[in-house]
Length: 187
Image: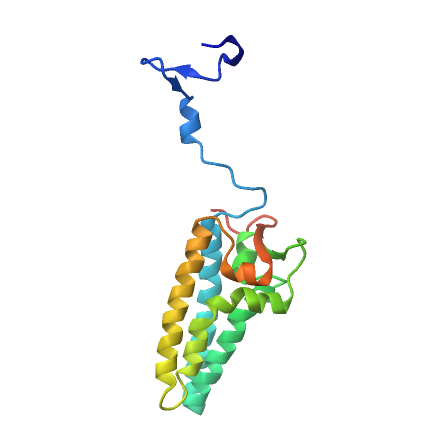
């Protein structure tokens, strides 16, 4: 063993180099301020659950009152909510606020409504499909295409987040998610 590197490498019984056991058990540290995938997914689930509940109630009430056009209106409200969710509650979504996350622009400042629309456009395809489905005759056909596109886009976005790459929506908007403050709930 080299005296200069004493204590940094271990010899195995076969005289090959080895590394301390703790090197294998420690996870790679994430970049400062970068949230983990679990928090991002939970924040998205909170956001889409709340939006889904509001749209469901509106769909029921407006659907009874106005029929097909009421359901289209409820879907358009949901579409707006998805697109603008990152500027909704004090400059961030409800889920991000609960988990201590925030979306910022390239300079680290607050995002604009236009950036929120660009960022969430890939995740709003399903809600757009719901609005289009109310169009008589061919709406269901366009809705099916949008639902398939929504599934593919959401799967791709999840893959990017899981592999610690920027979401396609973030690339479009020039934004990224950061840790900001203490989460309201501990995970």
